Length: 307
Image (cartoon, rainbow, N blue to C red; front, side, top):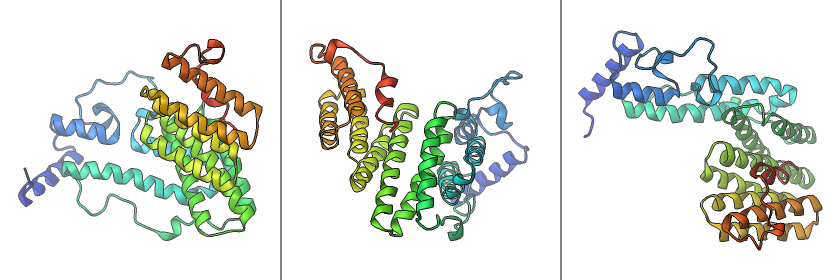
């Protein structure tokens, strides 16, 4: 049913009354507000939820948008001077997250088409000029992401990695000497592979993971980095394999092996064999799996990605 102007005015008035605490939202709107802010009804002060026990700790992934963004800002501070490179693009990432929440608010009739989003400011989104020093800082940041993986909430870490990729896009679009450009592409290949791992293995978002891995593969080719291209292709193989698409997974692994043939490396070759062994074992081809061994999933995916 289409909303009339009177209905919209009534919904906005009701929203303001809820904000002032004059009324409680209906169960439907209460559920939508909980979804919007990724929090329970009690923490939002709108009732309907069980009171959290004193001293209970909340998971950063289940916290509100503000807590998630606060965690990302805190992590940005931990990265030190090199992290300042990401700050201009962080505003864009935060804005995108806010816009997604705003879209839900509009569906609820609690927000107008104006406001609720940070204003566009060109000065906040500039990433500086591509220089060897900038490339070195970005490489340092990529190493830090790997170190922070086991101690940081995936959604928080992903915010920084996305800002990292946006920063690289800005730098690459400005043009630079060929050696520096290849260096930036090589860094984007690593960062995008890491983003794909976060999206698929931690955030369970296979569609986004495919996009990140494809970006990693394109960047590795531009950089002439055959081993990073192999890592990207091998990581893609996990996605169809998770849906029992073993033939497609093996095709990706063959593509990865072809890249390794161009730049032989025993570590990456062994990792590819372990991944293939796992996939063939899961597919039921026990005789085809080397040694009939099935490596653990975390070990299989870590070796080639941590280059």
